[in-house]
Image (cartoon, rainbow, N blue to C red):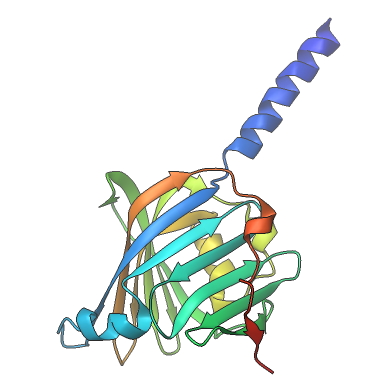
Length: 206
């Protein structure tokens, strides 16, 4: 009897450990500014897109954008490859273990920040040529181990800094422009691995 109770408790704890990871959709809205503060969203969004539709499950993620420069970003952890699809329906693949640049400073922000009515924490990652500020809800986590090889775009650097929490908003600052992106909708739901593939008709860039 004691063994049965122990196994029941253990199963419950294991279920909670699995259930704590976020799976679903996050819809972001984009805005763009020059270093002097001038809003250039109307012109920049044509290339970069006004929104980013982000989907993630336990293994993979993808982003769908409505700009002309990039229409889709896809990462598959089983391959450790990152794919970028442009407006001409041409895809390019990148080794996920390739670093995009060294992070030279990680700074945790004090206080909490409101995004979609959620109390978020903030962290700033500074590199040689840019600075990115992330705001995240600690309850929306992914398994860091699954993405441990994802160095491209400094993704694993961010996940380690946020303890695995996904960003609900981010601000990228570089000498050319500032890109602000903020979640306007969060939709938890199960997503099958089959949804994380390149669209039919996409040509791979050689």
